[in-house]
Amino acid sequence: MTGATMPALRKLRAEDTHLELVEVPVPQAPPGWAVLDVTYAGICGTDVHITHNQFPSWPPVTLGHEFLGVVASAGEGVALVPGTRVVSEPHSLACGICHLCRRGHAELCAAKRSPGWGIDGAMARQVAVPAHLLHPVPDGVGDLAAALTEPTAVVVSGYERAPVPLGGTVVVVGPGPIGILAALVARAGGSGRVVLVGRPSSKGRLELAASLGVEAWLDDGSAPVPDRVRDETAGRGADLVVETSGSPGGIATCVDSARRRGALLVLGVPDSPLVEVPWGVAMNRALDVSFSLSSSWSSWDAALALMARGAVDPAPLATVFPLERWQDAFAALADRTAVKALIDPSRLDRSSL
Image (cartoon, rainbow, N blue to C red; front, side):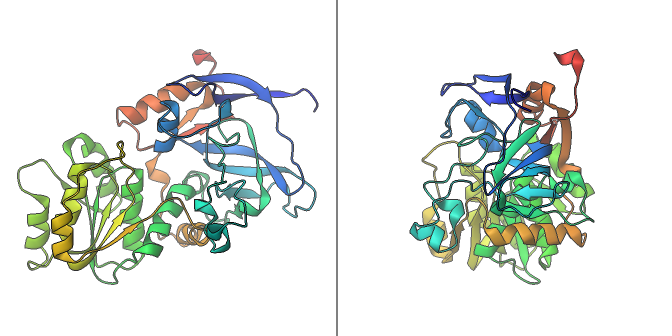
């Protein structure tokens, strides 16, 4: 309907904070694009960085690059049937002709403008996205789990770079959403033993992981984690360590926990461009080090397949907030009372208006 509007959570200016819930026009579907009714939109660490102007964005822009939706309308040339549940890769406006796109890595294209920071995202009732980025959600996957496909795909992409060792020991450092998902996917991927490590500030998240069957260690300073890893692997060390904290302490723990000729997978994003790394230890261990960023095309289908067969269920990580309570959602992440906050644009909480 011409002139129709909807509330959307927008970054209004390229300065610290400046998030507001404002009315914006309802999106239309140009050729090759689809408009989705948003079921849930997840808040990512990137959204926090965008909020504080620590990540590039093109304001005014609606936040939200992790989302589940239902096809509402499709532009010319799009065969998707309205009513189809879908999730979307956040790789819109990748050029398709650079060396990365032509190698199959549109996720790393310099021209990419993802929903949520480069184009309008999903923290609104509807969002428009390129249809070729959409993946239908299998019938057996619930909405809460499907809404976490993007972070699950990020983890799967990492394991495409540094494969899960069949029957081997995997140590994951950092029990945020990516860390917990990294442990769950490693277990589903054939590891013999998976250990998730976190500091006392993350005790609640470790307890959640333990309730999901993940072996969780509290790093309270009473004994060095690398020593315990070696003690429980006959002096060898972990076959694969996964760094998801982005902190100097987490990085040091990972490097020192790995066995010689072991592997280190880096998924954590540091707060600073320069981070202290025990480079000499890594060299002495002859580690294979892989950095992984964003998500490959293949990782999305793999993530959904793992959910469809019940091998990975991210749903227990989610806490849902109505769009009008977006400030509470961000606060819950900051004080660690929520692992993964999801925004539901369809729910209205008039008490917060």
